[in-house]
Length: 389
Image (cartoon, rainbow, N blue to C red; front, side, top):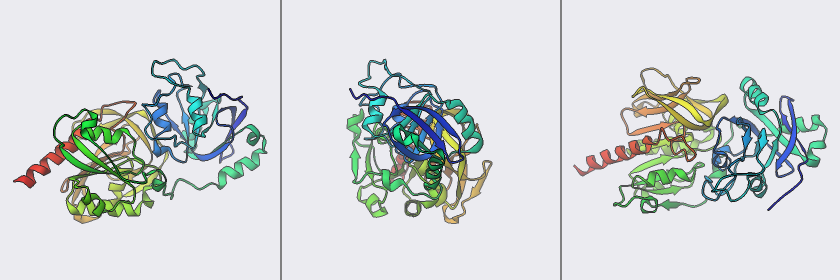
């Protein structure tokens, strides 16, 4: 077992606010945008979600690490969070699936963290002031003058205007077979999934419904998509500012022009919005956690969803409208947040394209929105039927 002493640590915000605590994870220093997530559980999935690249994650739930970690639940092959902030870390996990402590994984992945700070006060500050640049400094790094630490924090690049998907995307294409995930019939459809920071559970959810999934890197072209024989295209979640994703925006436009059905989640929702000609903007503190309520306009139902995004699409919530890129026809907002009325989904009425701003694969729960994968399969079924007539 890897062990270490727990030296002093400090969390420094760009506005000069300081939180002092104890080191948790690797001793050293790290920089990133500090954000909070409201999930009571799912910390292993959170830390390994590529959408958290370059972000220091604050857990609002006060006791973290209770169930340890295992080798089945990660959403990727490494932890992507830039740093980790908790109120109280559990040193003795208790769960039949646990194989080691969370701190052992933090150390193994080189994640600098801090514990024993007032995460409630920190979260209230971020809700008022907004997500901002920050740094965690522990051990000798924490002994430097505060003004030097604040200056180092402020000098780092902002998340706004930053293109990060290339850093987290797969380097080479791979595929996920339905038969490996409980599907015992013939392959129902072939889907090309563009990896902008995809989580491991996402292609599995598609494969469970009979879809063979070809996961392609962020720089895939329409020719790459067609070479897979795909009858549907999926765009994943991912980090960064959607306004910088010019190549992916143009790719979505090519997909829509070709008539191939499109489904996007999270970053894929923002990219669809921009492909349609809509604007995106940075939220003050974002939506992060596994307890976010979303209104489904078509049914009137409320779904509790898993979310992780700091940007959103700017579109009218009521009625329908013509896409600013007029050839894509009529569009409507299909879902919206009950917390702050942020756009949570788009649906094109004249072409086969829809998207949501959250994570329906939700490995750590909830599973209210898993039906969206069925909806995508149904769209592909309908298009296959039309082609066969």
